Length: 302
Image (cartoon, rainbow, N blue to C red; front, side, top):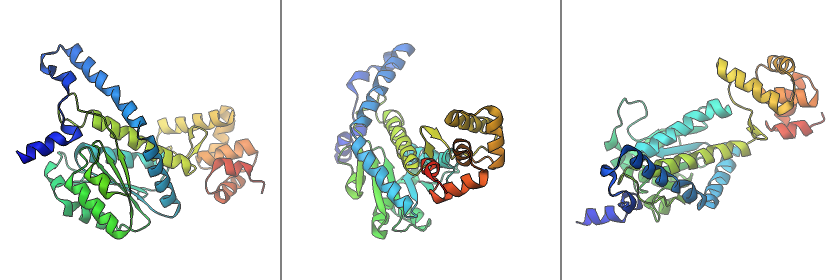
């Protein structure tokens, strides 16, 4: 009875009164109900934007000081962390070790090892194995806000002096109480009771998108709203990179091709080269002096 009472108190395990008849709906009715529930997610995220901003600023400060970002989670929450971490190198040209993800049970299995999330010692051990330091930031992700693997990781992170952030979809969460900063999104009960890959997963994906993108923009990996540190490692991305350089500079295709060739396909250097009218070597020098920030490099005069 006590266990059932604890479950009922969790925001993520409440029964949704709007979808009690889900199994009696036509397909279109079912999808309409799910879509209506999904519409509630952005508004719930909007309510915690100040907390997300604080989290981003702490991560930016840490990375400027040589720190790394670790996402830690289990199940859907952990897999969303893995996805966000894996997308940073191709999107922002970051080193693979800058943003890392730890998933309970490991990220290489064909099937999820859901039992691994019950072990707090495993969360601590996985973080210890990455050489966590006081310069790093750990983001614990758990829809329920109480996953033992994440709790153990955050407790270990605190013991080492690393900065900690909690991302949960349950208010007054256990991980929120443990972390330096808490992002708790009140998405309400799921359309399918307890299936937190739905609204909770969507909310976590939105917030992780914000965290990584805003962090990288603040670190100078955007010029305007163009991603200018992406890695053009295939034909599609090379075409996209040239298109971005063209839009950012107004240069024609021939000039863009010449600049990209001269800079070794470095988008930032190509933009500085074209807008400042300087050589590839000078563009690269200015960027180095400006810490990789295109606007600052464009202001450089020598």
